[in-house]
Image 1 (cartoon, rainbow, N blue to C red):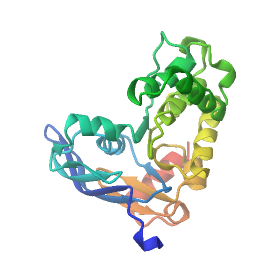
Image 2: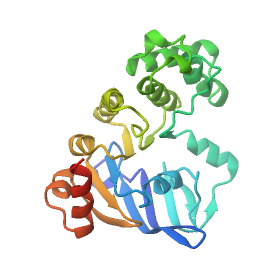
Image 3: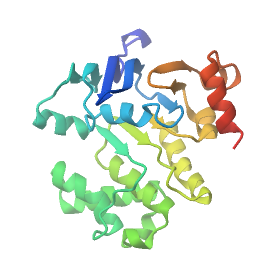
Length: 254
């Protein structure tokens, strides 16, 4: 297979999303290739998180189309049937700003419950998978702990392990470090860097510009639509749009 034969794992065409009279997404078109890391940046309210949530129909766009993992997820407001949608969501992992862990379950149970309930794995197999993923994120020794006993950074690493337990083809990260104390951000970013190095396809909404510079294959700058995109060195060192220059000057000065 040649490079030209490889299909995008995510194809977005002319996407539009309104909240009442507010046009939050306008004419978004984007291709993401397998193993590519795309980082989405932009000011608050620019539609970054909404775009990410549209990629697994947590938000349903009114216009345009999304094709992901070789399935038409949504076309002009019409979604896949529920059964197909749920199956597709297992291939599209998502990590949120909040950790959304089950407080009454141990760390091990939080990670193993998805494979057991949704993928039909045995308790033994799902526990073994969960332990291997907790080892990957550096938390195997906390398997018996409960979320209330963890730091924010540890909770987010458990959330990443839980998403990986479904063996997704794509990972979506919605500002995964924004709720963390500054000293805990690095441990989460380190896990994400390792995933990128392993070839995981990732779309990351973040304000961590160092991560974007170091890890991204492509950076998108959003302000309701994609106002600029390119390699990190081009976007950060030589932005073409005045709106991009203003945003970067503001965020890099903090």
